[in-house]
Image 1 (tube, helix red, strand yellow):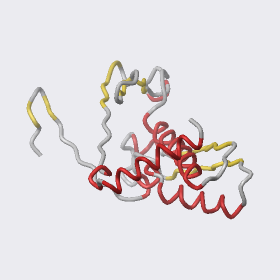
Image 2 (cartoon, rainbow, N blue to C red; image 1 turned 120 degrees about the vertical axis):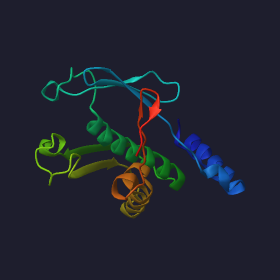
Image 3 (spheres, rainbow, N blue to C red; image 1 turned 45 degrees about the vertical axis):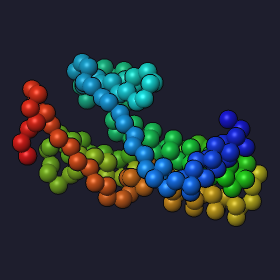
Image 4 (tube, rainbow, N blue to C red; image 1 turned 45 degrees about the horizontal axis):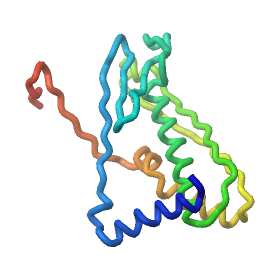
Length: 175
């Protein structure tokens, strides 16, 4: 999609929200299922299922990225999408956008070996590379806009309410 077409699509969405503010509220859905061992499938909309697995040292068959790797993928691709969208809206030409990410995780937390260590990432870092003929000032404004509006980055750095329930053999488990 060209930058102009992207700008037009986004502008149309913004206009629709301005005309009907309730349009701004959306819900995204995904369904997942354990298939074999620790291999799972994840389905979103009408796309083919994504295989999620673990490397052999974590009991998997290495048939796909694992969930914590997908968190990194979600952050990097969300940043790239936001760069494309914001650059289109700001009229900034981008020739290249790449994000390299690292997540530090201590397996002692995952395996419950040390209660002081959380099971998830302790630190996530990313390095974004931009190539553009735009001025440094314009690119700084673009970076600020992306980093302050990226939904996945926001989700990772802000406490988010998460709730769940478990159904066992057709009956909702009591809390």
